[in-house]
Length: 139
Image 1 (cartoon, helix red, strand yellow):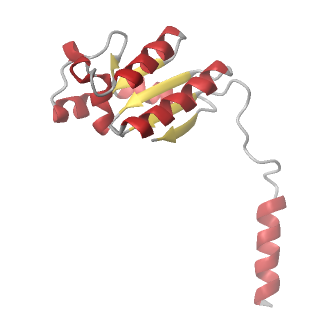
Image 2 (tube, rainbow, N blue to C red):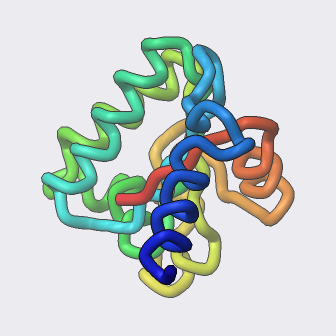
Image 3 (tube, rainbow, N blue to C red):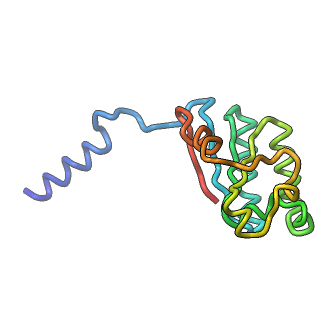
């Protein structure tokens, strides 16, 4: 009997009333929460965002935790490729927000941020993250 109940539950999950899987629409927004200062991982997240943005998805990148260092001009030597990608993304219309609490923690000032980066606040990040049909990913 337990086997049958489990089988029915599994079948209901796969064919249930929810219908088709929740695939992203052609223009659903993407919110990338970037927390790493590891160049390869950061580059992966930025590249993914760039590809999706070029496919028509509005893009917001949130530099959070150690990723605030990627947005600092003083870190250009370590993050030249990632900073170039951020500039390219912003030139194509993506929004890049930076966590103010993380900036303070890691000693990054607003004057040290790359041009075009925005110091976030709860309204900016909330409006981007909770926009209808937004998908989010983290690196």
